Structures are given as structure tokens and as C-alpha cells.
Image (cartoon, rainbow, N blue to C red; front, side, top):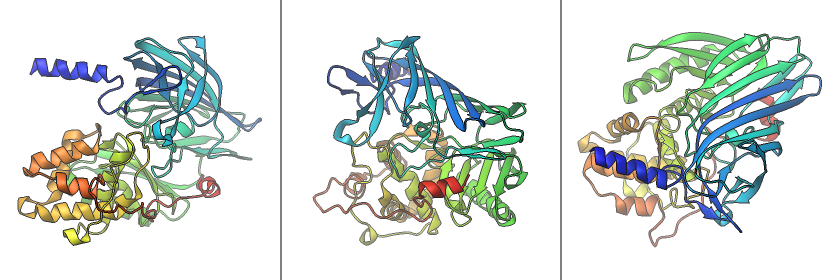
Length: 442
């Protein structure tokens, strides 16, 4: 056993950034290398007098092979240092032009390194006479819509510790932050936030606002494991329906899948938005159950790439439909997990074709207890571990003692000779909002 563990560790190092990182790729005169970020420390300053937001981030990472490390950041940088040397973070297309990343301007040797980046944040920020509102809204259906919209980040396969220091300069109004990390008030309009080290780029929930901007209520939910889990619900509308629904859904999910995976719950009853985070969501009342399911599947067990994102959306959508059983005549060919290994978004077919595939598996294995006990086991064994579709298939086959290659090849990977349809429209739980609509949610 010790020999096996050592070998697995050596394989992880050889792959550069771990087993779930995509393959490194060649640029014109260098190799672009996926790395392992260990922690990020960021200072965010909101300047009321200039209506500007600045961010200073220090990214510590490990690189296992020689090359230029890959990160991502959509805003332009104003300063970049690597190990105290000035450089650049240039844009580069991933193979097949499926997405864009940032690649360091220098070639680095293997080892530990430190990146320093300064950038401005302008997205989802609104300066008011009373102060400032800001949020890190995200989406898994559009490319480059995770933490990289605001701060330097790694791709979704990687997990790392993140700490924010947030300061609002020049505002007489008291502000507050609702986040899925540990928020501490250091002084008036000066905060620190510590996020867990298992978070990925899609995990973070962050909403800054003047105090009393929303109706807000906090209470404890008694978990089946004995914990008193703090819950905060806030909204511009009345809270009673959101609170009642939150308690009901949490009890349902714990009965099906065990203790809630996170140490707090934050619910923004925005009436729209529909996005999941670790123990937090911006949601409508109708989508609340769907989004909280994602705290188990998506932000509990975590997709490492876009090709794995269909799993959690399929599970949540199957639940929304009442966990129905389906026969093969209800299934349709798709390539939900058959896209480029560099794809970073979820295939929209997950909501429909993926949900029916889950219902098919549930019926196929009904004599062995159906799919829900397996999903609980899958969550328990892979909690806070990024996974690939192959991991999901392998675990299914091991649990039920059945070969599923034919079904996955046809309905998930799109490897059959039958025609594969294009992606379906978005699910109403995850509507695509305009930039103005996102600003209105601040």
C-alpha cells in the first residue's frame, strides 16, 4: 500500500498540476504549463472619491515542469511580478480555440514560485451616494465567468486557500459583506475574509453592500450530524417564503444525501440569478431547491472541467422533476462529456438529456436500491475532490457491478455513430442575465 501511494504521488507530480489538470500545450516558442496554486492573498480597495476598485493579489504556486505557467484573469493587469521580477500575463488561446487563458511572459523552472498581480475591478460594481455595492456574480454556462472575472485565478481543476482584505475608503456609511467564507470586521469598512482551502474558481460567494440594503434574517439549522449550521437569508422582498423553503429543502437533502457539506448557508433571494456556490446561492424562490442541491453536487463533489459539469446539473434537474424513472426510449444521444478537454463550461443538455439519463440509471438499478444511495456514496467518498466524468462512470460500474460503456458512449460522450444533437436551451433555473440585470441584483 505504501508503494502504491508513493507511485500515485509521483504520477501527480509528473502531470504538473495533478491528475485532473488538462494537458500542457505548446505555444510558438515555449510550453504553457498548468500549475498547482497553493494560496492567494488579495487586497481589494474601493475608493469612493475616484469610483475605482483596485486589487493586489499574491499567488503562490508550485510548478512541476519547465515552461510558462497558466492562470486566468479577464481584466487587464496594471502590474505583474514573478518572484519579484517584472513580467506580463499575456492572453493565449487554449487548443482548438475553446477558451482563453493568461500565460506568464517568462519560462520558469520547476519549483515554488510567487506571482504578484495588480488589476482594476469594474464588473458588477456600483458606486452610490451611500457607498458602494459589489458582487462576484458567476456562471457555469458562459466561458471565463468564475473568479477570473475579478481576480487572478486558476482553472476549475485546482483547489487553493484564498484570503481577502477588503477596504472601503472615503465612505461615511457602514458596509457589510455576505460571503461563504469567514468574514471578520477589522474596523469600520475594513474586513477580512478567509475561504477554505478546498475551494475552486467556481466556489466563491461575495457580496458587499451598505448596511441595511436588504431585509435579512439569520437562524441555525439543526443538522442530522448534530451541528447548528448558521443560515443567513436576505432579499429585497419578504423573507418568510425563502426561510420556509430553505428549511424544507435542507431537511430533504440531508435525509437523502447526509449532513449538509458546508459550515454555513447564505441565501440571496434575488428573484433571479440562479447560481450555486459552496453553501451559498443567488436564486429565485422556485430555483432554491435546485441551487441548494448543488451544495452537494457541484460545490460538494466538484467538476474538474467543463466536461464533468453535466453530472451535477443532471442530478439537480432530475431531483427537480421528482426523481422519475426513464426508459431508453426517453434518452437522446449527446456529447455532454465529449467536448475538448479544455472546455470550461457546462453542456446545457445536462438539464434535459442528463436528467433523463440519471432517471434511466435509477430505473436500471432499481432492484439494487436505485441511484440515490449511490449518489450519497459518491458524495461521501469524493467530497471536496474535483472529479472527471470517467470517475463518475467508474464509481457507478464498481457500485452496481455493471458495464456502462455502451450507455456512456452513446448518451454522454457522443461516441456512437448515431447523430448527436446540438446543445439545448438554458434551464430556467440558470437564466442568462444581461450586464444591466446583473447590476440590478447588487
